[in-house]
Image (cartoon, rainbow, N blue to C red; front, side, top):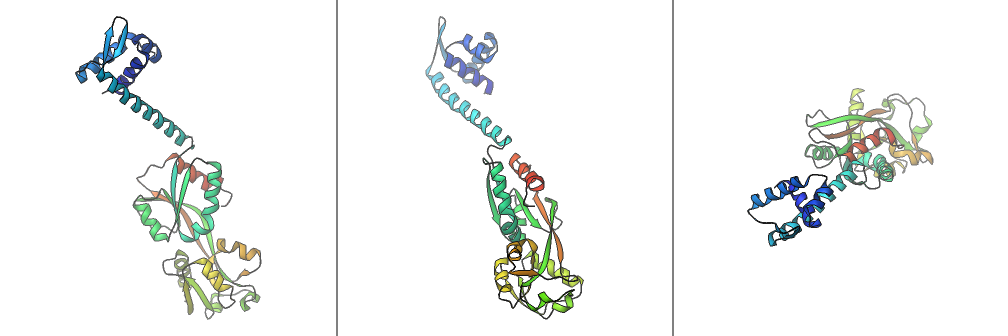
Length: 296
C-alpha cells in the first residue's frame, strides 16, 4: 500500500468529500478518485458508499480510517522527533571516558554542554581505558575520550589535547626544598602509584624505561584520590596527571617537584567506531569539546 494513497484516503474520509480532500492536498479531484479506486482494487474491498454527492465509510473503510489515523499520527511524531534531533532539541549520547579523564575533565564539559543543549541527555561511563576501548569497538558507546589509543582499524581517533604527568609531594616533604632534581635522586624514595591497568602507570613506566631507571619501593593504589591522600601523609611521592591536583596545589597542600625528566607527556584522544555514522547530537558534542568548551 502506498503511503500517499493512505494519506489521500484519510483526508477524503475526514472531509467526507473528494473535492475538499483534493483542495486540501493540492491535487486534482480525478487524481484523488484514482488513488481511492487503486486502494479498493488492491484490497478487494469497498471503502466508501457513494450516495449522490455524499460519501460514507463502509465497515472496511472505518477500520482502515482508524489505522490510518494512528499511522499518520506516528509519522508526524517521527518527523517532529527527527527535526528536534537535527536542531538538538532532543537526542541522547553515551560517552565513555577513562578514569582520570572522566573524573577530572569530563564532568564540567558534560554539564556545560547540557546547559547549551538542554534537550540532549548524556550518560557518562567512567572505566579503565582498555574497557572503554572494547565498548567503542563493540559499538556500545557513541564516543570516548581516552589516552594513547593503539592502532585499531575499527576505530577513528583524533588528538584532543596533551596531558602532563608530574611528580608530586606534600609541601613539607624534604624533596620540595631541593632544586634541579634528577630521576636518579628520587629512585630510593617511597612511591605510591596506580595499578597495572592504569594508563598513567603505563606512561610513567615507559618514561622511566626510556631513561633507564626503575622504581625501587612503591605501593599500588587503585584511584588517584587514594594516591593524593597517601601523598598528604608526607611519606610518599607519586606521578599523577597535573589536572588531578589543581585544588591541592591551589591551597598549597601538594607541590609539584621540579627537575630534569620529572615530567611525562601523553595525548588524550576522541575515539568513535569507524562504521557508525554520528548523530547530530554526537557531532555537536565533538564540536563542543574541540571548540566551545572552556574547561579545555
